[in-house]
Amino acid sequence: MARVLNNSYEELVEKAQELFWLKGFKGVSVKELSEYLSISPSTIYNKYSKDDLFLDSLDYYTSNYSDPFLSQLRETTEGLDSLKYFFYTLIDALLDKTFPRSCLMVNTVVELRNENDNVVKRYDDYMTVLEDSYKVVLEKAHALGQIKDRNKIDDYAQYLLGVIFSLSILYKLKPKEELRQYIDEEMSFIN
Image 1: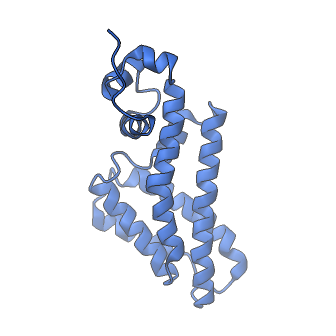
Image 2: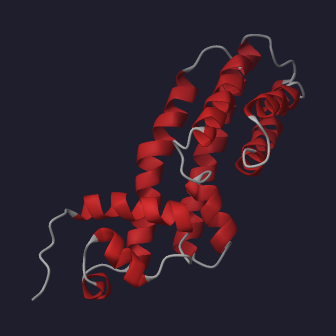
Image 3: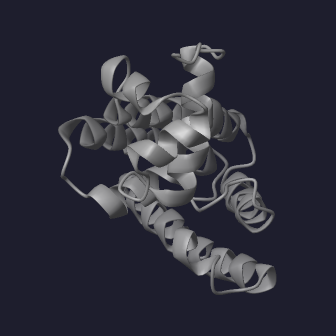
């Protein structure tokens, strides 16, 4: 007898995102995904697909984790202190396991690189929003006199992309105090 689908597709995506976040796309088999979602493998093969669930999981991550976090960052008014606080909050989220395993987008690009055009598009969109969010705050920092040369804002935004990627590795190796010190040191290069 066929199992009845008790969850909406959105609920399946939310739950699938948890598994993909922990194990990555390649680390999850259709069988494991079906068991985790309490649906039959044939439902994944015939109604949904592992690929679609994964792509929609990335969209769910962006909508429910990344976008709200970055929206708050763009609304801040303290300039460089806002960026420092943003990174401190990220450190706390990584260490207290709010994020089960680093940033889902960073994990995905490391795992899949350029293997899937749909993933690359989502990743590129994510990076653009992240960089643009940095630029908004850096512009505010310039207006506050914290950044002398406005022409360096694009370079600083690129630099901060590297900082966030570094954090996705360093949080596994360093205690909180050292991570905060790392952020303080990296932020001192922006002036």
